[in-house]
Amino acid sequence: MEEQHGGFEGHRSRLKEKFLQSGLSGFLDYEVIELLLTLGTPRRDCKRQAKETLQRFKTLSAVLEAPAEELQEISGIGSHNVFGIRLIQEVSRRFLRDRMLERPVCQSSREVFDYLFHSLRDAKQEQFRVMFLDAKNQVLEEKILSEGTVDSSAVYPREIIRSALRYHASSLIFVHNHPSGDPAPSESDRAITRELVFAVQMMQISVLDHIIIGNNRYFSFADQGLIQEYEHDFRSLKERL
Image 1 (tube, rainbow, N blue to C red):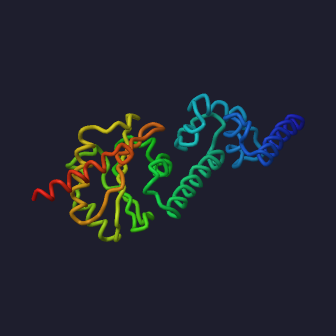
Image 2 (cartoon, rainbow, N blue to C red):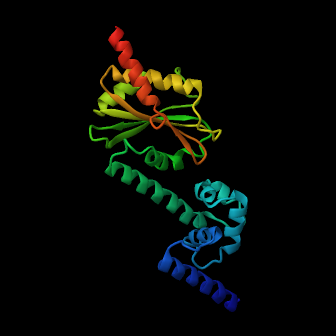
Image 3 (cartoon, rainbow, N blue to C red):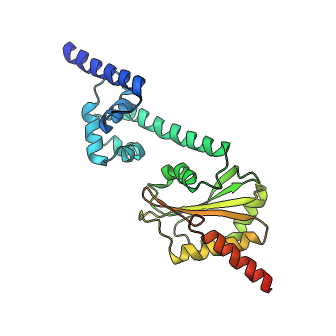
Protein backbone atom coordinates (compact mmCIF):
# COMPACT_ATOMS: atom_id res chain seq x y z
CA MET A 1 0.00 0.00 0.00
CA GLU A 2 2.83 2.39 0.85
CA GLU A 3 4.53 1.64 -2.45
CA GLN A 4 1.29 2.32 -4.29
CA HIS A 5 0.86 5.55 -2.34
CA GLY A 6 4.40 6.59 -3.23
CA GLY A 7 3.71 5.69 -6.86
CA PHE A 8 0.78 8.04 -7.35
CA GLU A 9 2.48 10.72 -5.23
CA GLY A 10 5.44 10.52 -7.61
CA HIS A 11 3.08 10.69 -10.59
CA ARG A 12 1.34 13.73 -9.05
CA SER A 13 4.67 15.46 -8.43
CA ARG A 14 5.73 14.86 -12.04
CA LEU A 15 2.50 16.38 -13.33
CA LYS A 16 2.92 19.45 -11.12
CA GLU A 17 6.55 19.88 -12.11
CA LYS A 18 5.63 19.51 -15.77
CA PHE A 19 2.96 22.19 -15.42
CA LEU A 20 5.27 24.62 -13.59
CA GLN A 21 7.90 24.24 -16.30
CA SER A 22 5.76 24.49 -19.45
CA GLY A 23 2.14 25.15 -18.52
CA LEU A 24 -0.39 22.80 -20.10
CA SER A 25 1.69 22.21 -23.22
CA GLY A 26 1.93 18.47 -23.82
CA PHE A 27 -0.75 17.59 -21.24
CA LEU A 28 -3.45 15.13 -22.19
CA ASP A 29 -6.99 16.29 -21.38
CA TYR A 30 -7.47 13.69 -18.67
CA GLU A 31 -4.24 14.87 -16.98
CA VAL A 32 -5.62 18.41 -16.77
CA ILE A 33 -8.81 17.07 -15.19
CA GLU A 34 -6.77 14.90 -12.82
CA LEU A 35 -4.84 17.93 -11.57
CA LEU A 36 -8.06 19.84 -10.96
CA LEU A 37 -9.73 16.94 -9.15
CA THR A 38 -6.76 16.49 -6.82
CA LEU A 39 -6.78 20.12 -5.67
CA GLY A 40 -9.51 19.18 -3.20
CA THR A 41 -8.11 15.75 -2.27
CA PRO A 42 -4.31 15.99 -2.63
CA ARG A 43 -3.67 12.59 -1.03
CA ARG A 44 -5.93 10.60 -3.37
CA ASP A 45 -5.23 9.18 -6.81
CA CYS A 46 -7.78 10.67 -9.25
CA LYS A 47 -6.48 9.31 -12.55
CA ARG A 48 -9.32 6.79 -12.97
CA GLN A 49 -11.98 9.36 -12.14
CA ALA A 50 -10.41 11.84 -14.55
CA LYS A 51 -10.51 9.32 -17.41
CA GLU A 52 -14.11 8.32 -16.63
CA THR A 53 -15.12 11.98 -16.47
CA LEU A 54 -13.64 12.65 -19.89
CA GLN A 55 -15.24 9.50 -21.29
CA ARG A 56 -18.65 10.63 -20.07
CA PHE A 57 -18.52 14.32 -21.05
CA LYS A 58 -16.39 13.77 -24.19
CA THR A 59 -14.34 17.01 -24.14
CA LEU A 60 -12.30 18.99 -21.63
CA SER A 61 -14.47 22.08 -22.09
CA ALA A 62 -17.62 20.03 -21.43
CA VAL A 63 -16.09 18.70 -18.20
CA LEU A 64 -15.19 22.23 -17.06
CA GLU A 65 -18.78 23.37 -17.66
CA ALA A 66 -20.48 20.28 -16.21
CA PRO A 67 -22.79 20.85 -13.21
CA ALA A 68 -21.33 19.71 -9.88
CA GLU A 69 -24.13 17.20 -9.29
CA GLU A 70 -23.41 15.46 -12.62
CA LEU A 71 -19.69 15.28 -11.87
CA GLN A 72 -20.45 13.66 -8.52
CA GLU A 73 -22.45 10.92 -10.23
CA ILE A 74 -19.07 9.42 -11.20
CA SER A 75 -17.85 6.95 -8.61
CA GLY A 76 -15.06 8.38 -6.47
CA ILE A 77 -15.81 12.04 -7.16
CA GLY A 78 -17.15 13.98 -4.19
CA SER A 79 -17.73 17.62 -3.36
CA HIS A 80 -14.06 18.11 -2.46
CA ASN A 81 -12.94 16.88 -5.89
CA VAL A 82 -15.32 19.25 -7.66
CA PHE A 83 -13.62 22.17 -5.92
CA GLY A 84 -10.83 22.48 -8.51
CA ILE A 85 -13.19 22.41 -11.47
CA ARG A 86 -15.57 24.95 -9.92
CA LEU A 87 -12.59 27.14 -9.03
CA ILE A 88 -11.27 27.25 -12.60
CA GLN A 89 -14.81 27.99 -13.87
CA GLU A 90 -15.23 30.98 -11.60
CA VAL A 91 -11.68 32.29 -12.08
CA SER A 92 -12.17 32.16 -15.87
CA ARG A 93 -15.46 34.06 -15.63
CA ARG A 94 -13.94 36.68 -13.32
CA PHE A 95 -10.91 37.09 -15.60
CA LEU A 96 -13.02 37.53 -18.73
CA ARG A 97 -15.36 39.98 -17.02
CA ASP A 98 -12.49 42.05 -15.62
CA ARG A 99 -10.79 42.08 -19.00
CA MET A 100 -13.97 43.37 -20.63
CA LEU A 101 -14.43 46.05 -17.99
CA GLU A 102 -10.88 47.27 -18.58
CA ARG A 103 -11.05 47.93 -22.31
CA PRO A 104 -13.44 48.75 -25.18
CA VAL A 105 -15.51 45.98 -26.70
CA CYS A 106 -17.24 47.77 -29.57
CA GLN A 107 -14.95 46.28 -32.21
CA SER A 108 -14.72 42.82 -30.76
CA SER A 109 -17.71 40.53 -31.11
CA ARG A 110 -15.34 37.67 -30.26
CA GLU A 111 -14.55 39.20 -26.87
CA VAL A 112 -18.25 39.47 -26.03
CA PHE A 113 -18.69 35.84 -27.10
CA ASP A 114 -15.76 34.69 -24.95
CA TYR A 115 -17.15 36.52 -21.94
CA LEU A 116 -20.74 35.24 -22.13
CA PHE A 117 -20.27 31.82 -23.74
CA HIS A 118 -19.48 30.08 -20.45
CA SER A 119 -22.65 31.29 -18.78
CA LEU A 120 -24.93 30.69 -21.79
CA ARG A 121 -23.69 27.50 -23.45
CA ASP A 122 -25.64 25.12 -21.19
CA ALA A 123 -28.76 27.27 -20.75
CA LYS A 124 -31.86 25.19 -21.47
CA GLN A 125 -33.85 28.17 -22.71
CA GLU A 126 -33.10 31.40 -24.48
CA GLN A 127 -31.83 34.37 -22.48
CA PHE A 128 -31.83 37.89 -23.86
CA ARG A 129 -29.15 40.08 -22.31
CA VAL A 130 -28.27 43.74 -22.72
CA MET A 131 -24.81 45.20 -22.17
CA PHE A 132 -24.83 48.94 -21.41
CA LEU A 133 -21.74 50.92 -22.47
CA ASP A 134 -20.55 54.46 -21.87
CA ALA A 135 -19.23 56.97 -24.42
CA LYS A 136 -15.81 55.26 -24.33
CA ASN A 137 -17.43 51.89 -25.02
CA GLN A 138 -16.64 50.58 -21.55
CA VAL A 139 -19.15 48.16 -20.04
CA LEU A 140 -21.29 49.84 -17.38
CA GLU A 141 -23.68 47.00 -16.65
CA GLU A 142 -25.02 43.74 -18.01
CA LYS A 143 -28.65 42.75 -17.50
CA ILE A 144 -30.81 39.72 -18.33
CA LEU A 145 -33.90 41.22 -19.91
CA SER A 146 -35.94 38.09 -20.57
CA GLU A 147 -35.81 34.29 -20.50
CA GLY A 148 -37.69 32.08 -22.91
CA THR A 149 -38.38 32.55 -26.60
CA VAL A 150 -36.94 35.85 -27.84
CA ASP A 151 -39.66 37.74 -29.70
CA SER A 152 -41.33 41.11 -29.66
CA SER A 153 -43.70 40.05 -26.88
CA ALA A 154 -40.80 39.21 -24.53
CA VAL A 155 -38.40 42.08 -25.33
CA TYR A 156 -39.72 45.52 -24.45
CA PRO A 157 -37.88 48.48 -26.04
CA ARG A 158 -39.18 50.87 -23.37
CA GLU A 159 -37.61 48.74 -20.61
CA ILE A 160 -34.28 48.77 -22.45
CA ILE A 161 -34.47 52.55 -22.91
CA ARG A 162 -35.40 53.05 -19.25
CA SER A 163 -32.38 51.00 -18.14
CA ALA A 164 -30.09 52.75 -20.62
CA LEU A 165 -31.09 56.13 -19.20
CA ARG A 166 -30.62 54.86 -15.63
CA TYR A 167 -27.06 53.71 -16.41
CA HIS A 168 -26.35 56.78 -18.58
CA ALA A 169 -25.46 54.44 -21.43
CA SER A 170 -24.39 55.79 -24.81
CA SER A 171 -24.61 52.47 -26.63
CA LEU A 172 -25.89 48.93 -26.24
CA ILE A 173 -24.95 45.38 -27.18
CA PHE A 174 -27.68 42.74 -27.28
CA VAL A 175 -26.81 39.08 -26.70
CA HIS A 176 -28.95 35.98 -26.66
CA ASN A 177 -28.36 32.26 -27.01
CA HIS A 178 -29.83 29.51 -29.17
CA PRO A 179 -30.05 26.30 -27.09
CA SER A 180 -30.23 24.33 -30.37
CA GLY A 181 -26.57 25.23 -30.92
CA ASP A 182 -27.19 26.90 -34.30
CA PRO A 183 -26.57 30.68 -34.00
CA ALA A 184 -28.17 31.57 -37.34
CA PRO A 185 -30.74 34.34 -36.75
CA SER A 186 -34.43 33.60 -37.24
CA GLU A 187 -36.81 36.02 -38.89
CA SER A 188 -37.99 36.95 -35.39
CA ASP A 189 -34.38 37.69 -34.36
CA ARG A 190 -33.95 39.97 -37.35
CA ALA A 191 -37.28 41.72 -36.75
CA ILE A 192 -36.70 42.40 -33.05
CA THR A 193 -33.16 43.65 -33.72
CA ARG A 194 -34.42 46.09 -36.35
CA GLU A 195 -37.17 47.23 -33.99
CA LEU A 196 -34.70 47.82 -31.16
CA VAL A 197 -32.29 49.74 -33.40
CA PHE A 198 -35.15 52.02 -34.44
CA ALA A 199 -36.37 52.48 -30.84
CA VAL A 200 -33.05 53.42 -29.24
CA GLN A 201 -32.03 55.63 -32.18
CA MET A 202 -35.00 57.82 -31.26
CA MET A 203 -33.25 58.43 -27.92
CA GLN A 204 -29.89 59.03 -29.62
CA ILE A 205 -28.52 55.76 -28.25
CA SER A 206 -26.71 53.46 -30.63
CA VAL A 207 -26.74 49.68 -30.97
CA LEU A 208 -23.22 48.34 -31.45
CA ASP A 209 -24.18 44.72 -32.04
CA HIS A 210 -26.57 41.86 -31.46
CA ILE A 211 -24.71 38.59 -30.92
CA ILE A 212 -26.38 35.19 -31.00
CA ILE A 213 -24.43 32.47 -29.19
CA GLY A 214 -24.63 28.85 -30.29
CA ASN A 215 -22.45 25.80 -29.70
CA ASN A 216 -18.85 27.08 -29.82
CA ARG A 217 -19.81 29.66 -32.47
CA TYR A 218 -21.77 32.86 -32.78
CA PHE A 219 -23.50 35.21 -35.21
CA SER A 220 -22.82 38.95 -35.09
CA PHE A 221 -25.33 41.34 -36.67
CA ALA A 222 -22.65 44.03 -36.78
CA ASP A 223 -20.05 41.80 -38.43
CA GLN A 224 -22.61 40.93 -41.12
CA GLY A 225 -23.45 44.60 -41.73
CA LEU A 226 -27.03 44.28 -40.49
CA ILE A 227 -26.80 46.88 -37.72
CA GLN A 228 -25.56 49.42 -40.25
CA GLU A 229 -28.37 48.40 -42.62
CA TYR A 230 -31.03 48.94 -39.94
CA GLU A 231 -29.51 52.32 -39.00
CA HIS A 232 -29.64 53.35 -42.66
CA ASP A 233 -33.29 52.27 -42.83
CA PHE A 234 -34.02 54.40 -39.76
CA ARG A 235 -32.33 57.49 -41.20
CA SER A 236 -34.17 57.05 -44.50
CA LEU A 237 -37.50 56.76 -42.70
CA LYS A 238 -36.73 59.82 -40.56
CA GLU A 239 -35.86 61.88 -43.65
CA ARG A 240 -39.15 60.94 -45.34
CA LEU A 241 -41.07 62.03 -42.27
